Picture 1 (cartoon, rainbow, N blue to C red):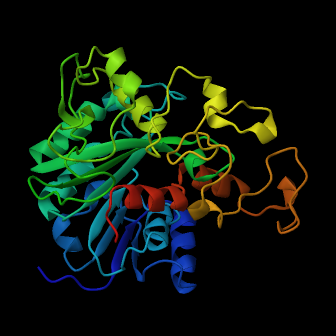
Picture 2 (cartoon, rainbow, N blue to C red):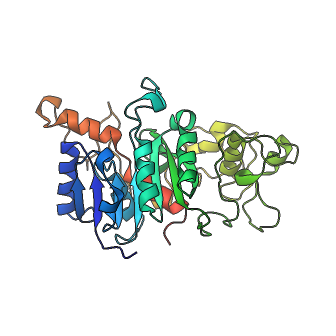
Picture 3 (cartoon, rainbow, N blue to C red):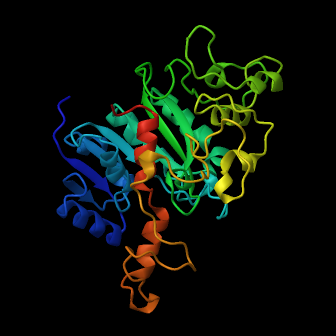
Length: 341
């Protein structure tokens, strides 16, 4: 199939659709079409001429993040940050019984369109209220999937904003890339890992990868594959820089440095290689500047804060920002999965 260099944005809210048009005119987003049609009415055959397809496009966080990561505008991908209200811990938690549960519509378009890559985002509540439906739906469509949890704080933002990110591709088409040797790829399961399980959290003895778990990881599990995904995450975090950090040390000591009163363990970096709430920013993230937190004095480079009564479209702006994805997080997710060279 030949793809043309154009993008499709589906966004039903007029204010957000207007923002997308303005950002395209400014050259910040790939040029394309903004469709305000209800996603239930969107048909896959209408999207065949487009390269990038952004469902629930919001104010353009996905395409902007792809550009920040170096993703070419002509490279095909489908993204969707489908509504989070049905699975959010802040709502009624009705999940599939909520009329705003629109994942089936995304799955329908994926099944009919067959894009080479699908990138999804939702709140962390999806893990306990709909992850099985999403992964099962992708499998029914003939797609394999990988997932990770990453917060905005992981790229230096002054707020947490913890989100689930899912990458899907036609079954069997996964390339070798990303971090590590590429042979221990996360394969999500519909059940919690049990003792003795291998899969995504195991380190294959024959792969020759240098990124091994720290020595205490084997002790905690009796020398077997890590039985719980949280243990695997902690081990990977501790050994992110290949230093074999022992988890028995002070958690604060690992995250903080001597300059702010922490007691760093010997050999531990004060700026960890993976996310969470890191102390400081890695060199790759130093270019990002975030505004001063609420209640603190503004930085010199910040524009003056506007009085709420004088801010036009304040409610629409706050709602759009609340539903948006952080472009810098999109870029970091794309890099972590090795989707760009």
